[in-house]
Length: 548
Image 1 (spheres, one colour):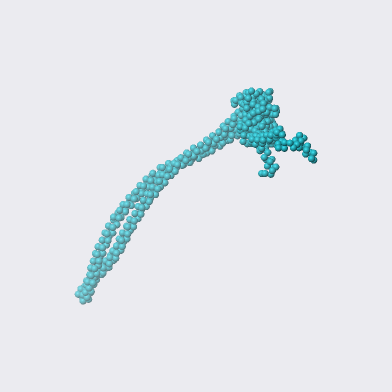
Image 2 (cartoon, one colour; image 1 turned 120 degrees about the horizontal axis):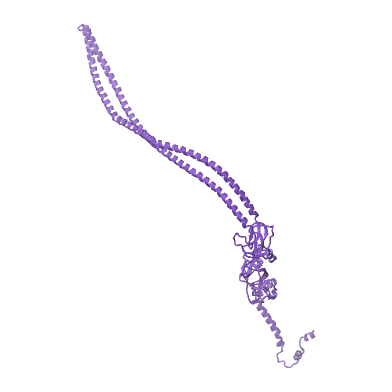
């Protein structure tokens, strides 16, 4: 063990230490040359630490894409439905853009189609037109008959109303005149009678009253005279009776005296009767006066009734005028109804005619469509890249026929790339990317320098990508690694005319014989972030130490 420790030091050092000479000198433990490795190691550690803090490691995401011009390759879809009778082009043929005229230029036609659906529609429309014409003929006949009946009925009503109007207009003034004249005459007669009665009644009453008073006074006087004379005559009879008894006078004288006495009594009785008759006459006069007053009241009542009759006559006259107005209104309503019925018939006829006209126009339109839709044309000038239909196949609107390369040589090439949603959401406009054609080794040539110009805000489906690229099979190969929708990123390529490819490469001038063209598939890397190396170490240190 002691031997092993001695072997650690050099022999010269041990001999020098064992010598008692120069004990006052410092002992050299490490040779200065031995500091070089330590210094180098410390420098490396310092550099590594400095780089781990201030250095940056790029974070990239990868995707697959294709180089093409903006909507360079598009799908050809059938705008019509029908059975393809003849394909006029094959892959590689070039066609002209449809100029929108009705002339079938052979260079514009892709295929000739038998538009079965349009022909069926035309056949149905022809049947509809025939049915409309039949219905129009039948409806016209029925409408004519109904119109004749309506006119006859309206004419009958019009004649009746006109006769009523004529009679009412003729009779109304006559009735008013006659009624007015009759009432006026009656009023005049009654007024005259009333005036006479009002004038004579008090006069007659006064005269009769005065006459009765005078007669009563006269009769009362006569009664008093007769009553006063009766006892005298009675006394006279008595004396003559005595004289007769004495024989002084003849019996005739007694009879004469008795007769005068009897006549006197009779006159008294007559006067009393006359006085009673005067009471009766006075009562009758009073009754006559009251009767006259009653007659005056009756005449006044009759005058009021005449006023009422006059009012009723005026009311009846106004009612007749209203009837005339109503009849005239009814006549106007008949005219309006006649015009309305005529208008309804005209509208019904126009409706049927319009339906027939629309059907005829629809047939013409369908015939025009049959002629127009007998050929399939494209809205672009370009060359056919792919055909997916064959002769005899039935196509519908939207059926994919193939793809075409649009002739836009002045448009710059763009790179379209598809990323997974997680990676694609990290890509932003303006970020740099490396676009490497799949036929080029990235390790040797790097990639074409590009700049992101747009990122789809939402994931796109394979169908949407196929609509953009124009080749579903190519889309399937680009997006086959992911079943979910992906983010679509467009980028422009940085040009460099000094390179053979015409574009700037990241680590070289690119392959000396590579010409970039549309349809070139690519793998793409985008630098989405740059992080310090220590950021990758810290999570492991935290996990190892248990520090959150």
